[in-house]
Length: 189
Ligand SMILES: CC(C)(COP(=O)(O)OP(=O)(O)OC[C@H]1O[C@@H](n2cnc3c(N)ncnc32)[C@H](O)[C@@H]1OP(=O)(O)O)[C@@H](O)C(=O)NCCC(=O)NCCS
Image (tube, rainbow, N blue to C red):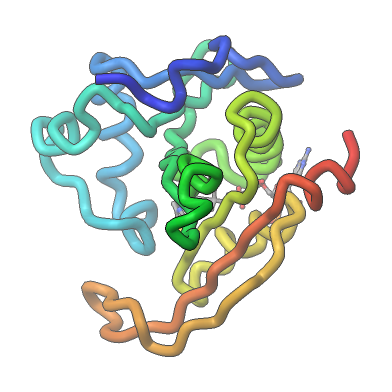
C-alpha cells in the first residue's frame, strides 16, 4: 500500500543525522529503547513484545527512522491526514496536515538530536510534502516533549483539561502544538 512518504527522496541528511524510511528489521533496535520504562511513560503504550511492536509498525507507512553515525537512535511518526473543510473546498484540504510524533533512545537525549531531526522533518513536511500545517500533542507533564516543540518553533494552540487517560496517573491535561507552513518559512534557515 502506498504512503504519503513515498514521494520523498530518502534518505534525508542533516549535519549529524540521517532520516530514512522504516524497515521491518529495525524492530529489535526500536524494541531495545521502547521497552524501557522511562521511554514508555508518556507514549501511546508500553512495549513488552517485539512481535506485537512489529505488528503495530507493519510496513511503516507513517514511520521515519533517525540514525546517527549508522546507529538507529529514534523513530518518528508523520501521519498525514485531511484537514477539516467545508464540502465545497474539501479537495483543497486533502492530505494537507500531519500529526508528528517522536521517540528517541534515552542514550541519545540531551544532545539536540531531536531538535535537529524535527527541523529536518519540517523541511520534509512543508517543502517536499507541501503540507499546510503540522500538529503534535503531549501530556502537559511531558515537559521534554513540549520543550522540544517550543525549541523547533511550534506554537501552543490548546491546553485540554483532563482529556487524556494515563495508565498510572489517571485523567491528565494535554497540549496541542502546531506550526503553519508560512510560520515555518518565516523562521528562516
Ligand atoms: C521528547 C524527547 C524526544 C526530547 O528529547 P531531548 O533530548 O530533550 O531533545 P533534544 O535531542 O532536542 O535535546 C535537547 C537538549 O540538548 C541540549 N543540546 C545540546 N546540544 C544541542 C544542540 N546542538 N541543539 C539543540 N539542543 C542541544 C539542549 O540544551 C537540551 O538540553 P536541556 O533539556 O537540558 O535543556 C525525548 O525526551 C523522548 O524521546 N522521550 C520519550 C518519548 C516521548 O515521550 N515522546 C513524546 C510523546 S508526546
